[in-house]
Image (cartoon, rainbow over all chains, first blue to last red; front, side, top):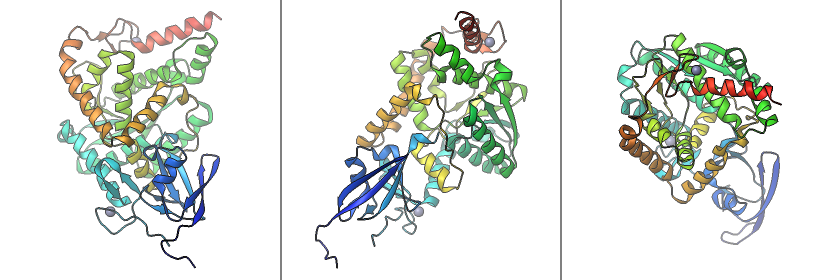
Length: 75
Length: 322
Ligand SMILES: [Zn+2]
Ligand SMILES: [Zn+2]
């Protein structure tokens, strides 16, 4: 049972190129915030969740896996 | 379950991109319209749109996202605006990278039913990009791979367009490319380049043998272009050019993206400044530059010998000295 408003810690897995990072987040965190936390500029990447594009205004939660693709990587 | 951000325009579909400078989250359909509207706007703005009927366009198709988008969009427009086009792929001979791109280009052209022509840099210029890089590295020359490759590719595209009797050369340059080029000119203190690029969004020029250019993605951010590419189901290329990281462009790109995040719309403003500045200084700067034709190859140049022939000669000389 999750009670609304109760802060929970969770982990989001971020894949970028061959790199995998685990970021500890509060429940429901904005993608933009996570990217900034690991030093990535949201303007220079696009983000997928389960193979589908999401935006930096979307939220992720504990257990989610996101893939980050640098815009410049695919000339 | 977390609710997904919906498109701010149709309010129906899931958003796939945030357009920060417009304050909009867009779904794939609305982004597609957004990008295509920008293409129409830049074609109209330059007056090219009204002149396309009956024309023959050469499109520089490298197999990268931008040139594929440009090809796809121009192909869609070709029926309504009644023009013909042919794709040209310049094979730089960069191993697997060039092979992969070549395959993608051929595949796309067959799918869309576009004629294509493959031009080998080795055959046309006598040297491939890796061979040129090898010579530059061995002789400790500071010229960057992208400079040689870029000059040769531009040269070949113009040559092919002349050979094909084409009216325009279409390239996939996006807004980020334009802004980066401008900043690079500033850093080099290259005022001529700024003056020349003033109307580079597709302009008519009156230089004989220099085929006019069209840049359909001139107003499209690189990030928008990538999302357009992916949401249209185009195949992503796994290899990137091994020499790209040696370019100053790489550093500038990151820097500009940083600024764009802090001040959304910054790229647009730099682009506008580039055009304004270019127009203002064009007369003064370029009036002293007389366009003539290269003594070796006869192609247009502001000097006795064009940059491509000059580089070719330099590479031969360097290769004899080590
Ligand atoms: Zn929409
Ligand atoms: Zn020449």
